[in-house]
Image (cartoon, rainbow, N blue to C red; front, top):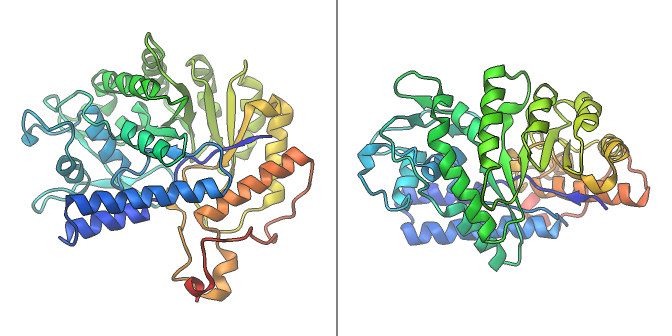
Length: 380
């Protein structure tokens, strides 16, 4: 049976908690309690959907780029010489700005979500400053979830940044890699078997200079010391142009977006040698439209035929962070035309089960799986 993986879940509850905190309706303790409830709700929904690989750490306080900046120490000197291991107020300031200063944002990797674009400076506090990813890994475990922690990979992080001196952001690669190495070691020490590294910058047409820096970065991440297995997630385009570098990088798994680029499957499958895992994104995470389940099942079977079923995971095309969580504001007559994040995961489970049993699925007109978390009153 194919493993079913979730690459990330919506953080609407976390964003609402941050909004209330900014408005003064919540203090720091109330913010953390509300954010924790949102995280646990997401984990519960994914577990109930039958997901085998459940992510942790991708929510943070609603802006993964700001959280990653805090993690690697891309924190301006104005926050002082000791930023308190990326204290809460610093992390929220990076995401939301301070005293009339609003940070710049840019669209993230084929979604309508806009994430902060940190400004990198030589005098930033370059060191591992945030234990949040490990804390959320352990929090998930306390809730009965053995999670796969998620990090924005170093290449995609830097390419979403700006620099104060006009240099290319990848010039700061050697500044961020020590924090990534330490973070991976901490995940391994605390029992993570896998870590997902989101690298959408490796999808589509990629400059040779970017590929060279990716190869250099992951050669260092694969260096001495403990580390979990690495699942590099590409999405928003095809990964075929970067395939040779990805194969040589020593990573243990690769996620490809077969919604954005279905034609890449056979080329990637032929080149993805050894016993490494290929995660195939067959459900559109960027659209609320119902999934064409027959087409998705066909792509999964093609991947399994090429690689063997034990080497293939099935997943959404990209993290579900832009998908709707509920249908509270949707008229009842439109509810059946929209897939929520939980719907998409249940569809994935259905597709994986059909592949295992040799069964068939119909097209997009197929009824959605049962929606236990959506009471009829919420759809009125």
